[in-house]
Image (cartoon, rainbow, N blue to C red; front, side, top):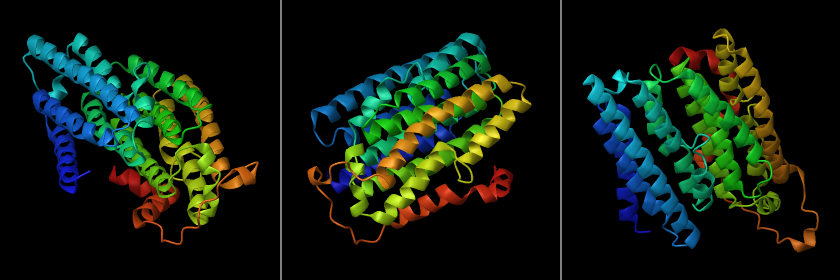
Length: 346
């Protein structure tokens, strides 16, 4: 793709995200979401492969429907209350429509079907953008409107997302699809807490972005799109593979790694809010996710392929690891000891 075109799309993504997260008027927030959608479409379809075109089409249709629902919700609220302010959402029908719209934007169950397919049709870098940057504006809107939304609806969606994200990721062999179901599962953790502690949901999103970026960039460095490819990458970048094991375990939420921090705080907050049953269910459902992260880690570092003669070994890569990967990986592993400082900042 032309560098100038890439620059325009990158600037449009930045503009759209900034516009949505900084606006307090529904029309401006909707405009930002539309700019974002239009800027990411050429990046998804740039390979001109039929799978990429299909992914771009699915993404466009879902996002257009969700944006229409956001507009409809805000107009219904303005009709009944005379308010266009995002934080003044008070009409019950508007709140319900907005919950559905944001669930579609984010890929929460039962509006999750598009997300694994779109991620599978994109490159790893575009997949990273779809899993992190493109989720930031809807998460911000969820944060701003959280006092108006029904906790029971969000909790149901959250538990279903954690269950399906873990369950459907179990038999996948494509790394992008596994990371898509991982994203759905993590969104469940954010949705369950946003009504009780919105700041905690944002903290969870920031740490999830950090860890997912580390995994996506590591997989991009070793060009691993399938589990069978991942099994042979130990010859290409042995040290990166070893660190990838720990990053995946951090994403699974195992102590003493960074990923344990949001899960620990969310379970603690849910218990304080006297919804211990929901906390227990979502904690047990995270074990499903742990299984497929362990499977990825096992394929990456612990196993050798069963028939080595049938697999083409990759050349040892003597190039130094990307600095960004090194920084993100270090943060993905070592932020738990400074959690009091993080909590004080948040």
